[in-house]
Length: 472
Image (cartoon, rainbow, N blue to C red; front, side, top):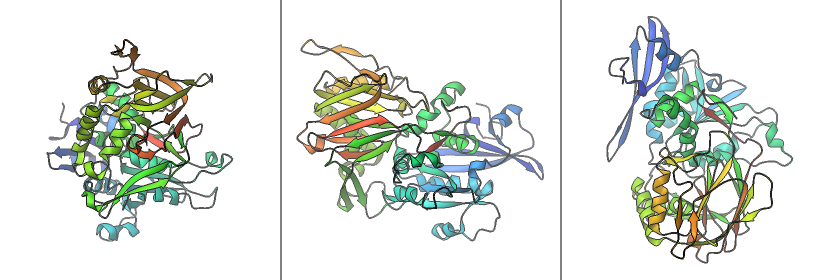
């Protein structure tokens, strides 16, 4: 790989800014170092008198984008989700994002500086409001506060979200939606994701074409996120609604130290709050996927850090639970809803994205921003068969179309359907097996209860995407 400035690699370049005195350029880059115990970030700035036109075309910032300029018509926010992923969001803000924004003339507002122990701001540049989450409800509370002004007079909002997928679903569900379609006349917040979660499904799905077209597989997600932050454009984020039967409740956990990503079980409380609906943009699932997401977030497993996912997956594959449920589909042609011809399932997952992780392609036909809801599903199988199917998803989505013959001679396959709506009704006795997942949020259904997922017609959020990606 070419090294344009000293030891700076092209895949590490975040942006290039022109200088006037002396003339030339400042090249900003990000280096990430990982060990078993720790991951660190280093933002560097190197000076260059001259650079190739190809580098300038790809990385030069002529001016700060309008969506990052604070004004009476727009407020800029940075939200640091301390509990996302393995708890690196605050480290990344302090080591990378804050100094980068300061170098570009964007500073944290005065009211935030005492919180970080920073000196008074002496610059005249644009300012942004900083929110550092204190608990699992912080982002949702923040989202509600964005629209407390007089209707029709609210400023636009840009939210730089240092989070995983959970932060996006909190933003989607953060404010009450009015009747009569009033929300469609408001200006939705513009979200810029800096991926600091575990799977970062939405981010990787939105940036998948960039990796494919530019061969940029060596570019880290955080470098790509910063490039999009500085040179992207806004697009409507497709979403879906999920409604739940009476008696359903959201399941969450809180601990006294919100900055500890792996607290001891003794310091964690479980919360069950009645819920009727949620909005999502990534995935709604029941079965193996929702079980994995929920159990890996329980205090028993969360203390193991990012190793917990493999531990939970191994246990679930060993148990190979067959979920007693019915699944009813409504196809996009408006035909009469049809029930799948099986009463036991291992995997039911509706999604609007292609990837659940960078290398895990769950819906190969999905394209960024296409707004299509697709269902991946298969019946009760052994743990080994589930593993075989998942491994094919890691092979570029080759699980779609897999076929096999069951022990009783029945032909089975991985189902894959484009749908308008899906209804999942659980018949499980044990509450352990009645958990559904909406973009990482867990909801427990009552016995005989159901979840109905359908596409939304209006956009509740704008999302910042690479400039090469055009809204559909």
